[in-house]
Length: 485
Image 1 (cartoon, one colour):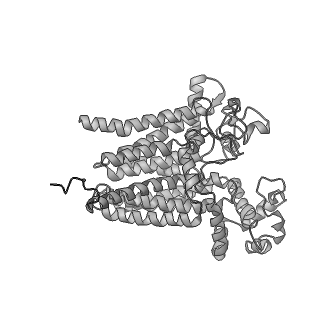
Image 2 (cartoon, helix red, strand yellow):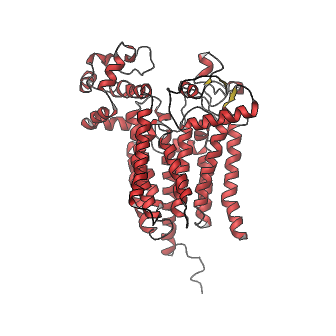
Image 3 (spheres, rainbow, N blue to C red):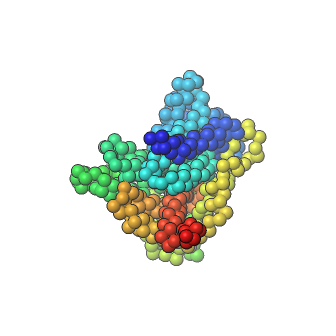
């Protein structure tokens, strides 16, 4: 018992304590880190009855993080939909209970997200208990390195829903691992996994499409883990994930979907077209609109400012038609994916500052503390579509190998999660590339990077274990004195 307790403290308690101290240092101790507003804050602020404390453009956007906001009587909840608003409303309530005033401190939201994120990381560490000490130690080390990186943590002190995507992703992963590996599993533990998956799918519009992967994974988990569960129940739960994702997409404000669709057509597709007028005609739009190639929705010179454009555009263009265009023009799709791959593995938007104005840092300054992981990725991972394809292919091979090797063990269901995360990362790359129009692509690839990090770490650990096993079985690791008898 002493060994078990000591092992838990060393391999679970210490990594969590270290992660907690690093998160506190970044999020709460000045100079704090966060992520400045690119213009997206306002819809989230209005949805939870918050407002800026200044009307000056240069003090709101791009350069610095604002941590103080006014709590106002009314807002507009029709502008935005996200499970991340649960965090925001809870943080506002906590702030008001603590201070009693009408000023909201963004750091309360950052702390709330960090606490739940630490809980999610803790689930992963607990699920690793059956492993030997060496792989558990490696997992603990990688958790501290990856999960405390400023490329992720800066989003916690912001109004961006990427933070919720990260938290709910890790809760979904941790929940799945516990359900899949524990000897006894009750309904409450599975319910935790299921709720986390629902919150993940509804954190951000681009997450909703991942239901096509999470639903089969849920069905697989229920049918394999619960012997008494009927397949009809498993199918109902899987369909439930899809239904919620579709309902979320339908309920998402039309104006916000129109923004990304406009950018996908004019800022990306037409701007890189050898025949923009022909492409617009293919989409059912007036070829005259080719003059707006390269514009994004927010420009005063955008086609969206033309009278009647919104109605015509909304009637004739949707994501299905956009996908059909690229299916009919595969060379154009390949070119788009190759250009997007240049932004892969870059976690930090260089145009958004990390500091408050009071920090004394220059505008758009970025923190270099706790950035080892994001810096390594950006410096050494090739930003190439072919490298991405190789990562996914190798990951699939390793997942299949893990499935064969772990069959019959308590980890038999883990490779399915790994395969699902690989599929989700590929799907997310395509969504962020084709669907979001190339505007602020680094930020739109946030979830892709989070998924790829889990896949890279998992793949590296499994490959290392297989090499270790091969070396031992081949005698390459035999002690030097073994033959001297």
